[in-house]
Length: 134
Image 1 (cartoon, rainbow, N blue to C red):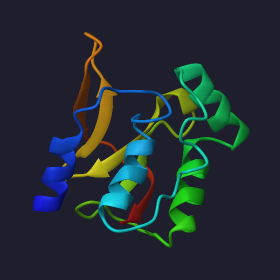
Image 2 (image 1 turned 45 degrees about the vertical axis):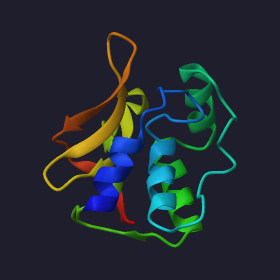
Image 3 (image 1 turned 90 degrees about the vertical axis):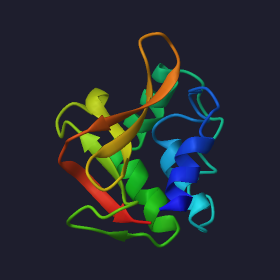
Image 4 (image 1 turned 60 degrees about the vertical axis):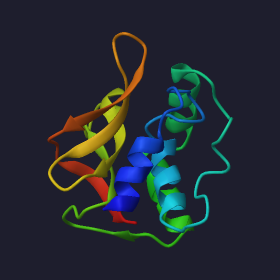
């Protein structure tokens, strides 16, 4: 629990596409848990939401990208969430409504850009599209 809370508390850098967005924070969490970086090929490859969406579209969507990253470091798929698991949540049919999330025990935590432009963590009650044990 302390490692998880420490990770969340340390996320003070602003929301930056290609560095600290909702998908790359899943990779950062895996690194914090002792895994190698599952997403070095994505870091710095886009710097806007449109750039991110173009990379995701070319790869078949966020679930495919996260699955490939998870497999690259040996993460095992789950059927039910467990504390610290990573997932893609949101719409199964609308890729613009999918986010990388971490299970905090009761809801999914997503790194979010608030309306005032500041980064924040948002809690979601959602069924994951896919999830992995970290």
